[in-house]
Length: 474
Image (cartoon, rainbow, N blue to C red; front, side, top):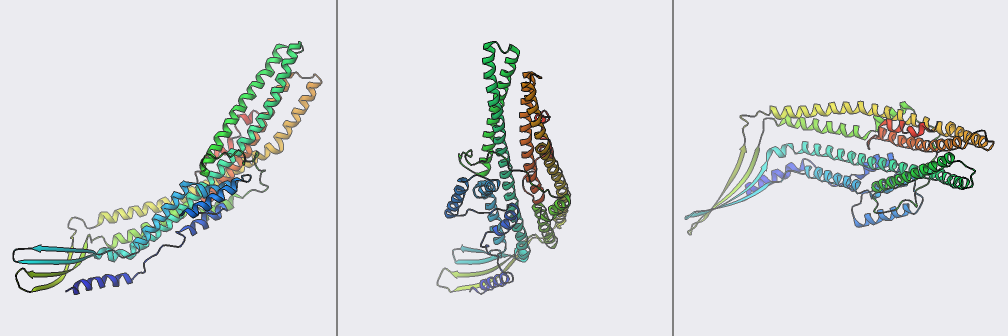
């Protein structure tokens, strides 16, 4: 009775044996993510999939927050704790599930129909399978596999994004604290000078003009302290968001000053070559072109076929009287003839999508090399500016401040000159801190340009952030 159904099922099973089904990977595709992003960031990459994983991540975060926080530690906390990054890993899991599903043969459709008349009762059973889906199954499975590789690279790029954001937020937060310390010190000196001026004025030893000058300088410095304190709060909140922390006060673990500048710098040729070799977005674009190339080939092969369905039919007819049952069966094949559509539109669309991917890949390669050169230029300029402040501007400012004080004590210059020099010295110190901060930001941007991930901050911001306040320090 069911010989036709068994024959159809056997045919499907034989087709399934032609290609082994893909299974879920033990690490959910995270091995490649860790190899790319973990190596680029020099930090561990963790996907939280269970309460145990979450508890282990929280324990690691707590340990890192109980010690002075370094830039690398901040990046590691973000990789453990950033929920947006974990959402990117969820998208990777979705892509793997789609790839596994696509690697399996199309499911048959079982149909059962009963028709009753006054004289007889008919039972009809069908197994329906799409011949087209079965024929294109291996190609579609390979395309889904490429998409999964692409999802792995996208997860790695998102990891690099989070790492770069965390590192840059860390540099800004530490620099803000160092600037606050410098401004607060200058404000304390200005306040002491203002109090002394108040006593001298009351005794008649200081005229109204000199008294007003010292008072306004103290008030200006107090305003700068307020602004610097607000900047510390804002940068720490941005860092807290990137790290995925909930109401944690980072004041107790952040250092008070930026690290010293590196002793050696990278070369432009090495940066350009490394960008061509390691850019994650270039690898993603290559896989996109590969997936569309496979899709284009599949579209060309099936351009004249719209729908082909085959079904095995088993039918039982039974007389409602005392008569015997009659069994029968056969096959049913449905084919939609493309009278008005010969597949040209679908082929043209697939071809244009493939050529679009190739052009975008070429554009991305050009842009990647240009971005690497731009980031290197900002990096080199920021380093030069920071070194100039450290080795030349600040020592000269110290000399000027010392000599001005000596001349004031010898009554060769008035108090106004002393106040002007104190103001210029404070601005130079702040500009020096900003120059060092801009170097570390440019250093991070250069890594972004080489590896991919993160939005490059404008080069002008890194180079020219020794802004008008810095220029005023000269």
